[in-house]
Image 1 (cartoon, rainbow, N blue to C red):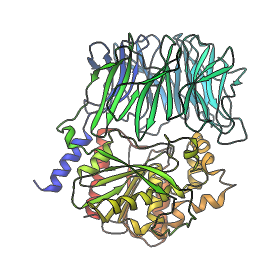
Image 2 (image 1 turned 180 degrees about the horizontal axis):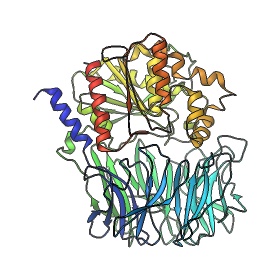
Image 3 (image 1 turned 135 degrees about the horizontal axis):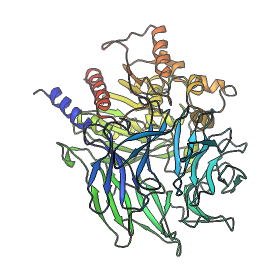
Length: 624
């Protein structure tokens, strides 16, 4: 068998590796529901937390793509899930009976519907929906089937939570004149008498995370002091007690059932570490787990029976596994072992953590927009060595943009490595995990310093790592990473020999007009202002404005059902290339693929394999 044929076989095997998603603990703590595609298709499984045995409940009723989470019903007899149309994310809420496997619709509404919370009373669902335009909260009464709108805000409402007695709701939104702001509110169950808890300063972001078991405390998050932190808000005293020393970014997760401890996740050096706070002493203890990315189960639903909590653990070479961690004994059992198929852990590339200094202006000439040097910052990155000598390099900026690359198992990265490409991931300014000021570096500056950070990172590793081939460098990204791929190709064309833009943004006016309402307000306008007020910025930082700078082969891939980044984004760039006289084809200037029955990416094995084949074929031809 030839080397290309062997690599194609590896591609198929990687796409077929079983993936576990969205583990969530039942109300009585003895079971875990999760999505799993060990059968070849995404299905709902339920696990016994004592024995570790799990069974498949559904047979095709749930979505092929495991993007959206599941939630237990209050009685533990059924599980709610989100069902859309071929990945368009215009979800309705369905429920599956765990005894029979039968599924039925529960809430059907226009727009996107997300199940925010399930009431302990067994009668109430709290929903977030864009039915009337902006994302707001709705209450659904299960016995009558009636759905009632609770909030009416111009900015998106999120983080909806029902109090233990279902008499109140907590949520986050913004009514201030500062567009960067987010506040935490508590209101009566019907949405009346909303009260802003005034946590932190205006311009910072605060949100509710979990109700205390007594219903008189809220676990909250806030980034007033730059780094995210967890706090306990006393609703009777109107006071908040902050946890930790602000040494690391920490994401609040849940109270323990006794209300005496708080669970959180700490970020450092691209790793995530679970911590437990003792509310009596205020002391924090990190769970004893290998380095990598360890997270608790779904926020607010993580506690198993006894003193055990549900943890998912992964690392660059370790696929995700599900653990039951005993907080008292400080030890854990494996509930679901990692699946490796025909591979061994040693077959996967580890991530080298590195840092470099960047002022946002690389040595490579800027062909679209020139910038003066920005503030010089230390930028974190991960480098995966394919072992090929010399090795081509794929620069892979993450999506979001409020996200980060971490030391977890990344299937797309390992796929690229298996095909002989080393991979660089850059946590450019604007990434999460480094504090509020680092995130805000990207406000009003898409296509600016953050793209300079990405290019500087590529220059840095090409200079430092002799095994990398500077004549075979590609950029590949999805979503905001797709925007980055487009922008890198038109801003720094001398740096790249090929590019792949997957579900990426190309025209900011069209994006603001046609994305979902909450993405418009909380992404486009929050980061770039209103299109009418900042028209010059919207035009200047749209990759399509500078399409004539394209000088290396570009592959554009987009799902036709994408509602986050509509397929019009790819079509606009393609049409502009045609107007400029660029030619399409496997040996021409660009290639174009629209993916049917798919939205904003997919976890489905067949759809992943299809994407892998398209990527591998393009890179093999263009970086040979």
